[in-house]
Image (cartoon, rainbow, N blue to C red; front, side, top):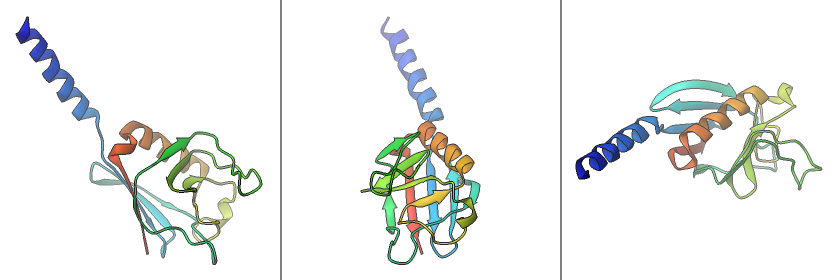
Length: 139
């Protein structure tokens, strides 16, 4: 009986660690781009919009704090923030309807993505888990 429990426990641990993924999201402010590495392999590179003059995007290394499939900004006139991944205070990575602005600073400090890319990133973070996701923002 003990042997069966031990074997079952080992199988659960092996299976769960095989499913765990490491996700590294790097935002380059000077290039206005985001790269997404899954288990050490760059799988995506997208244009973003970060904070415009007077509204800096925070730099540093963060983990997702909370996530919302559908969110509306309380501070900025209920502006839609689909697939929002909050990483520091009120700052988030989220989809935008202002896709013409992608590739240049245009936000109030958040990191804006094309809506389809925001949905994909949201899904990747959900799969990996917030504990296995790192968000790095640099110049």
